[in-house]
Image (cartoon, rainbow, N blue to C red; front, side, top):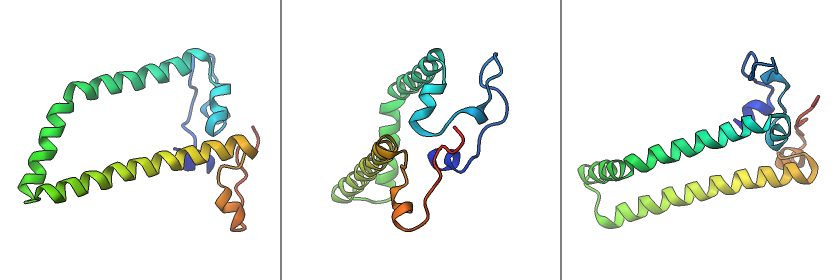
Length: 127
């Protein structure tokens, strides 16, 4: 999502009946200023529906994962290790997204590492 849209890739066509184009929506947090409130509410509502659907099958997914780990011959220590690794990967991803959001709000340059390495990204150029 974030890298692809920053590179300029957008869905073709309009996102509403008024004819507003996906190509006109800026990247990152600036997109929320361009989208209508009903559109943002629709996005939040859809995410809520996904969460409700996951809650319905959570026990089944956990049982399936447990069965797969058992069939792989993992002992309790290895299962705990793999769970901790997965949890830490999720935390690292959240911190990465948070860093992008903070740097975008500070100076509109979420890819600060690119600038430090001499390859700045023209973030939201033309918006």
